[in-house]
Amino acid sequence: MFKFITDNPGFYSILTFFLGLILGHWLALGRDKRKEFNEAASDIYGKVYDYLKTNSKHHLPTLKELELFAKFIPIYRRKKYLNLVSLYGEGLVKDKEAYYFDTDKAETVIRDGYVSELRNNINRLAPYFNVHK
Image (cartoon, rainbow, N blue to C red; front, side):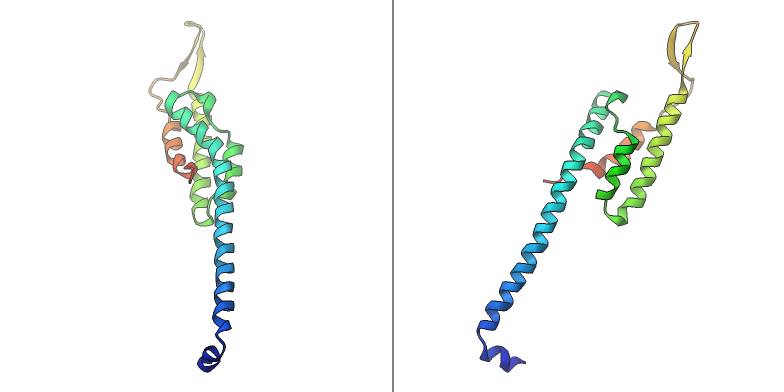
């Protein structure tokens, strides 16, 4: 085998060409995956960022957006992500149930002692949407 390599100097050229081809293809796939992730994450990241700054629920991403984003999460992190999304959904329901309309005051009020877990759940989900440069 070694004699074949030393007798054929063109072998190195062909070998390095194909190694470069494989490496270039592998890096291009990574770049394309990163672009797709950034496009999908930027919208959700913007909504999460706006919610954390303003604390307005109008900026929150929907459950459907979060569940559809799961395909961009690596498989080894996806189960934890989906668990956090389900906790987020439960938090939305609990928050909605915690508010009621007080007819005496004629305003919407929150039940005494209720602490929203929504902000905590959003903070736990936020690292999944960091946009990579």
